[in-house]
Length: 74
Image (cartoon, rainbow, N blue to C red):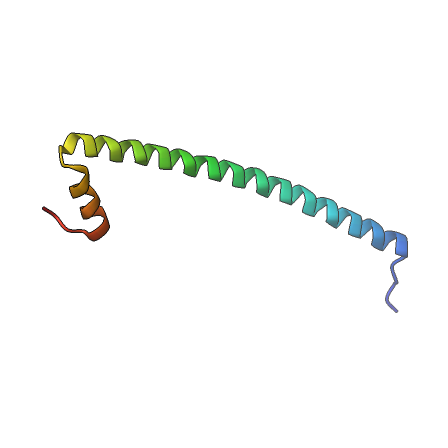
């Protein structure tokens, strides 16, 4: 016959599982914060490169915006 678990052992198991979930959530949130910071840095670098290319192109703002919005060259 199978051995039955006591209420105390089941509660201890539940407590351990809850602690594991809390730790995993903290690790997840820390990793998510790092990802968001890295993506923001990437966006900043991309924006600087785009602005630099725009300045070097000598094209008027309207022409660049039309190209970006419609894909039409002039």
